Length: 75
Image (cartoon, rainbow, N blue to C red; front, side, top):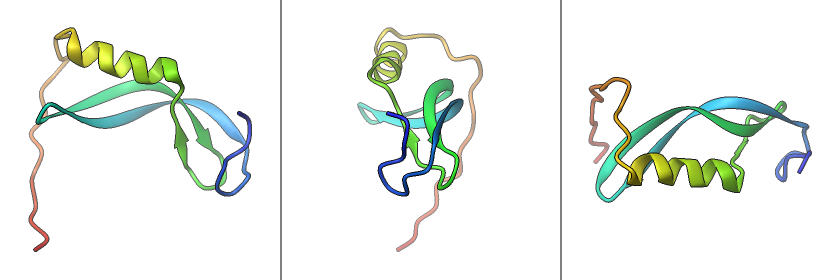
């Protein structure tokens, strides 16, 4: 894939940060390879990147650090 499905902009490989919920827990995965649209910023993950996220979470990889995240209620 070389063009964005939404705006037809060009995709370029980048390292991104992804927030992922799994089994009731939230994870921040940094430096994940992705394709990012230069025009609109849409992010596309390859099957390999998806597999890497699952592998990191399911195999109990030790985090490089812990972050505290504020939780807001919009109701």
